[in-house]
Image 1 (cartoon, rainbow, N blue to C red):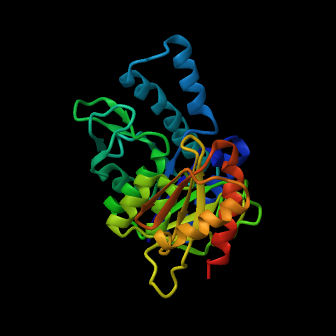
Image 2: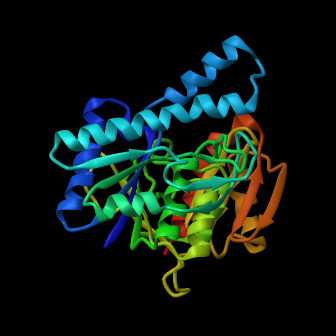
Length: 323
């Protein structure tokens, strides 16, 4: 069984967390899986590199920013391989271009155009764990490119599709997908499964659990996707197309602070839900300034000072219709 595991920056932020992530990978290998690991830059290292570049030049060239920012994931890949070696598991690290990830020429927000993962397959055939830097690839001109923030999720799903992986696991600092961010809404409920269409609506609405492009790729290529915690054992959340009989009316709610919007996702997140939302917000003294009905999503704009209360209020509505 071929397994892709992706570890985000919070899962690699220090030596203890790096070791914990490596032990998760080692357990999968010991269970008989062939394993490709995709890693993000550790902790806040990408932000630190951005700040350093902007201290030199407020508008640095995008090509050079890609060359700079791609180093964070390459460090994580090498350190993960070293950690695995220390635990007795032979591993080999690869930069994005070495893994065969080819993109367009848009620096700072490139799209993957093709993956030729022969070196990864060769490593697996040699009995190694392949550790790949996420978030990056190579342009047709041979330059380094990056996929934009959250692009390591996209790398993992794209590799799963290109290599025919049996499953793609995304490890982060939460136990899976919740009806809202549990750090903001303590009563949020973890979902054992979420429809991929609803996950896409949440990702586009501001949820940072998964990058929207990774959800689209999983939908288009039938990738078996699961979100898990690096810190606590559990079943996490499966992201797949659910049958109508088991897909909840509403799946979750998220916010976008920049746009001052709250997005509700689900098969009944449409025009019929709007009066209920308006009534619930009005009862809390929160005016609804704009509404937008999308596919599997209802996006509501409220004044910035009422955004957090709107999120809490609409989450209550989601819970009442979850079953």
